Image (tube, rainbow, N blue to C red; front, side, top):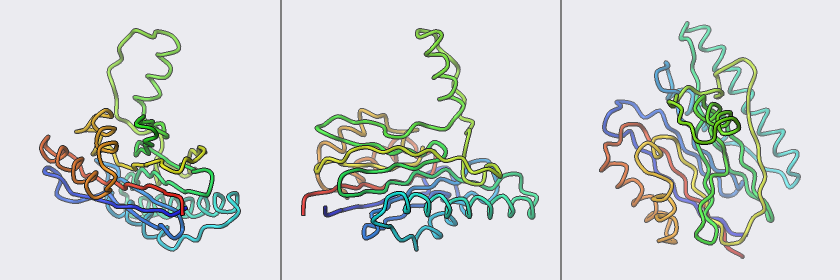
Length: 238
C-alpha cells in the first residue's frame, strides 16, 4: 500500500495558545492528533510531549509488538505528565490522543479522551473511536434504559494521557479497503462542524489539502472557539 497524508492545526480565534499537536509518520504508517486538556496547566506541553516522544516511533511487521511498544511509549508519557503535575503543583497536566496505525490489510485505532478518528468508505462516514467523556458514558447508559429521553450533556473527560497514574487506552481494529479515507481530529473541529459536513468534505475531494482547507474554512467562519488539529490519511494500491 502507498500512503498519503496532510495535516492542519490552528490556534483559533479565542485561545491565545495552541494546545493541539499533530504528527505524520507515513514511513512508519502512524498518524496522531493530541489535544491539551482545556482548563488545566501546560496543555500545550502535554500534547507536544506525546507527539515529540512518538516522532521516533518505529513500527514492526509484527502488529502485537508495535502495539506493546506504542502502549509502553504512551505509558512513559503518562508517567512524565503525572510527575510534572505533582512537582509543579499544577493539578492535572494532560492531553487527549488519537492514533491511527495502518497495515497491509487492517488498521488500528488507539485513543484516550475525545479526539476522534473517522473513516470514509463508499461515501459513508463512520466514527471509529468512541469519545471517553462523561457525556458519552451517560448517553450510552441512557440508551439502554430510556431511548427517547434527553440528558444534559457534560464534556468532562473520563480518560486522558496524564489524567491519572494508571494509563487508560482503548484500541480497535478494522479491515482495510484500498480506497478508505481517514480523518483524525481534535474536538475543536466537532464544536464547529457536524459529521454530515465532514462526510461531504471528505467525499467531494481526493486532495487532502483541499479537504482540510474546506473544513478549516467552516471552522473559522463559525468562530473557531477552540484550537484545532486534523490529519487526513488515505491509501492506494501500489
